[in-house]
Length: 114
Image: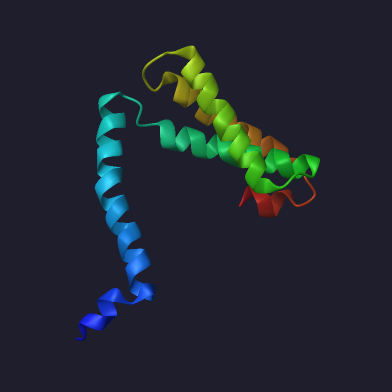
């Protein structure tokens, strides 16, 4: 095996990205687990999905809709200042049900629902 392969840009960028994520993500996981907010990732993902489907419903691009919905959910959670998973559980249920309701009323709802 040649050492030139280790400095190849095709290998270097994914390796650096994976190494950075392998260092940072366990620390973030421990932090949110200790704060009893481990449900945050699921809740924000479902809220972002609702934002994407709602953006499609009004004819807006999907990514800005998803980002704005997740940011709004994060701001509301921060504004409530309640520690724990109860707010995230509510966001999870609202995001999931909103996604299903919006997808049921969009022309391409079946594709968006999947």
